[in-house]
Length: 373
View (tube, rainbow, N blue to C red):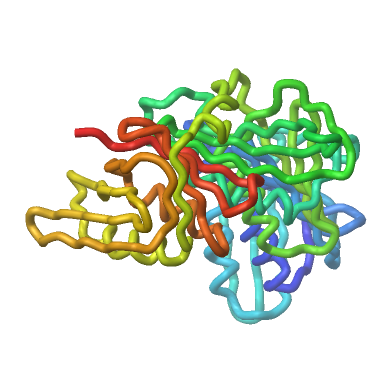
């Protein structure tokens, strides 16, 4: 292969695909990206066998061909080169030569025939979902997906459940995540019914990469759903995520408002700012804040034996019994960040979970389990 391409174009292509490579795999080829040239220009592909992507760009092609090159090293080299046109060519499937001005770089490559096949053929056959609506749901739920280091969680909790349904003849798409200590739900109304059966489970890494692509704000970007796959598509980029096969825990009874008889309403920003102060005080061992819900106020108290304590009273509406209960402040901070105006906090009692929503709205719900000693 042999081509000429502006450095900034190639750098942007490589930046998109970095998260789709696998750096810790026992298969060295998965840490590589595949470069292909044809009559349309240059294509860069990457896969970790769970997520896959291809990015296209027009460029001057002198010779058709392909090569597999280490994705991280190639990106770092290209990023540091001068902003000018690059010339790239391969030699005997063993070396890639990159020349720009007086800079000459030679990098080892692998046989492109060893690179895993990437199938993006179903990208035009799915249900179209606005990419910003998808990002809205991801932003409000991704933080309650456990990271891979939390090995005590079920495999199916390592992703987000995406389901569809209808209420009062209004169809919707709903995203649900949980790490067993909290649960997040975000719902978006759609124009037409889309049957997803029992739903699909999208792994955490896949959500992160799809969100990152959406954040690039590319022309014609969209999300496409099928019963067993999810795609991102834009003018020059196509990506897909392999789904988690399994059954997500039943969560519907947990988010029923009628299950929470005690009610408080408070300014979301006031509670958020107060919890940030409390969070700065708590220790890693005792990472909790005591909430006291009573008539006309919510009292926050945090204690660190090595540092001191903090007590913050906040004005709030309250209906029901007085409750004293401990929560992880970070869990509240994660959801309050996405609430404008007032937050509604519903409780079952001094030992049960609480449910947080935005005042008068039910498109997003967060359930938080208390901390016990």
